Length: 267
Image 1 (cartoon, one colour):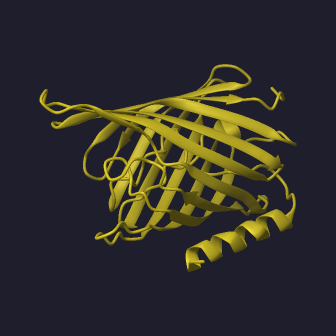
Image 2 (tube, one colour):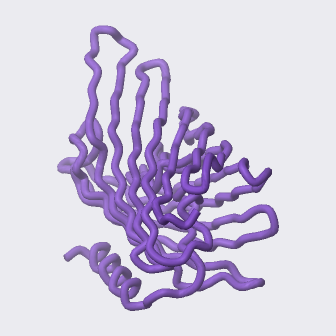
């Protein structure tokens, strides 16, 4: 077993052994509709559309995310997407593929106090299931990170650091990547919130989406500062939407619409 795999396995065992703590898991990578004060088991399903275009091609991606809180402060996340690329040159054919399958384990290891943020551990595996080389590397990647979260009156913030071990395809040596992120949500009313996230990545390209919301595709272009800004809209007790724009380090932009359904029955 590789060293990254050993680290992730050990972290997962510690997570399961730790048992429940206080509060809910928090992460700047996820739509905050899946967080809150609801106790017990929780199932959240999210899906959406991301659209990007440049001089060479346009791309549509339909992310799908499933989150399951098997304990109050620990959750399992399953994530993938459907991708379609349409070249601007009529002579070139369109192409499509199911994206890589990603699995995550997240857990709060330190609860929030008045003068102390909550601390969450995140472990992830990208299984390399997408068609290579056009839509993925075909290799298994690993991620390990920590996220500090704090709630203030009318807004909250998350500060995270995630390191990813990127598998190298034959004949190509990929670079590992460190991502530093800062996300915030400002409550404008009971229905609307302003949401923003910035990510600074060092090394290679990130292969992990980490959610289908506004920050889902950040750090995928590799190296430099990227950000996303938009609005969260609480459509009902169990349904929330996010819409906005993501700007990547190479100047490319994405239009994003994302919905989350909370099936906890605790509206």
